[in-house]
Every structure is written in structure tokens, then in C-alpha cells.
Amino acid sequence: MLPPRRHPALTDAGLLIGRLAVGVIFIAHGWQKLTGTGHAGVTGSFDELGIPLPSLAAYYATWVELLGGAALIAGLLMPIAGVLIALNMAGAFWYVHMDNGLFTRDGGYEYVLVLGATALLLALVGAGRFSLDAVLWGRREDTRERDPAPA
Image (cartoon, rainbow, N blue to C red; front, side, top):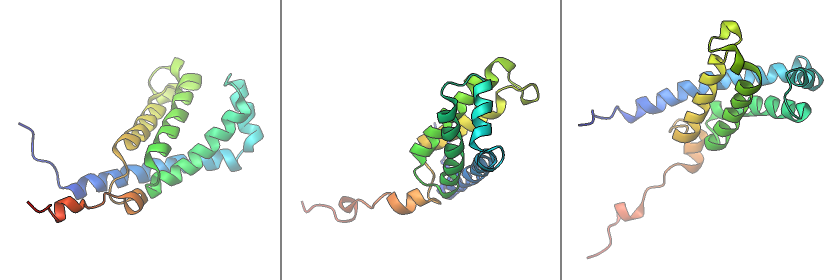
């Protein structure tokens, strides 16, 4: 037998907290790419790492992290934002961290694994009711439930 479901507001609050935390991290990393070394610096780093099409990859990483992080915070277009961020983290895993083991202290993939999995989780589960997705595209009340058809 399944345990009783938690109060829905707790689930939605958990989704909000997770979106805010991960969104802030992605905005910070995207902002760092945008304003730190800039596009040329990120492209150079990506080229040194052997990432294919380093200029295009640098644009993708910068803007997906910056705008995707903002989308997570707002809870907007969660399926799209979550998948794009997860793909970004898959690239970081594959090209940078995979051969360094699990632990971050060794340059490993634990950080990108958690961020990518969380982004994918949000893409699959949704942003919850404390989000712009819920405001813009929330579940509409089914009129058949309100007004049953006459017998």
C-alpha cells in the first residue's frame, strides 16, 4: 500500500526551493562566462578542452546557463529549459569531468551530475504551482467535472 501523499503545497514549495537554488548557480556561471573572459575567453577554453565547434558551444553554454537559470527561477518553460541545461551539463560531463572520477575536488563530475539530473528532473516533473508555467499554462478546471452532462 502506498503511503499517503504529502500536502501538495509542500511538493510545490520543494520544487520552488530547488529551482531557486539551481537557477542562481546557473545564472552565476552564465554571467561569469559573459562578463569574465567574455566569449573569446570561453571559446579559447573550450577549444583547449577539445570541445567541438568551440565558439558555438561557448554561445550555447553562456546563454543556456544565463537564460536557463532565469527560467528555472521564474519557473518558465520548464521542459525546454530543463532539457537544454541537462544537455549543457552532459557536455561538461563528457568533455571535461568524465575521466576525473566522481569527486569535485579531483575535477570529477559530481557537481555537473547533480545539476544536470536536477535540471532533467524539473523538465520531467514541471515547475510546480509556484511558477510562471502554472500561471500561464496551469491546469484548467475541466468543465465536465463542474457541470456533469444531463442523464
